[in-house]
Amino acid sequence: MIPYQTYDLATFKATARFADKIVVSTKLEYEDAVEFGINKKKIEIIPMGIEISDCPKKGLDKSKDYIELLFVGRIARNRNLETIIHALARLDKNFILKIVGEEARTSSTTRHGYLNELYQLIDNLNLKKRVELTGQKLGEELQQCYKNADLFVFTSLYESFGQPILEAAAAGLPVISTPVGVANELVFDNKTGYLANHNPEEIAKKINLLKEQKVRNEFGNNIQKLVKAHFSWETIIEKYNSLYLQCV
Image (cartoon, rainbow, N blue to C red):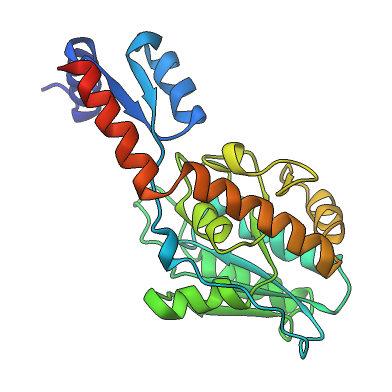
């Protein structure tokens, strides 16, 4: 019998050869597609969209005496959350971290117990009072998390897109991220946030660059404008309509 991975690979390549156009959501996926062997002329980059009217409006909370870092996403090893926690340990005590998401169900080949390891790390670094793991949040509760936060931090090892990055940007949060998925199209140093590697020291330094409320507001406004200009569903639907008309 042919292993299913080989079968999937063979059938996908055949499908790609006969397709008029292949749609990918990020420049990173474009590069992956080219490496896979797809003709560049067939590839169109059309990202996922977001409903702009659903974006929470951020207000200045003068009663806050802390800066809230936020991570949203499935809690899995590839998300590399220990880097954010180690970065937090290098920051002033007025920084706190909220981690929103449930532990991912992983395959039998992946080592289990990641969430417990994170709890242990938080304990070892004496960060219990500065880190909150909320579990999964959806709908209005999730929107409130974005609204309450000051900075979005994402240190994943790999993302094809990274929807939470787009959601945070749409909410007007400056973003500090590894160069994965849509971060490459939204995060520009000294304008909307900072791209960084997986070094906790570097992450901490980038976070400190956004310590001032005025700077965070400026970056947040910049990144929200980018989302409205390029990622609203109206814009995305227009791109698909245009692509369809090219093909017929």
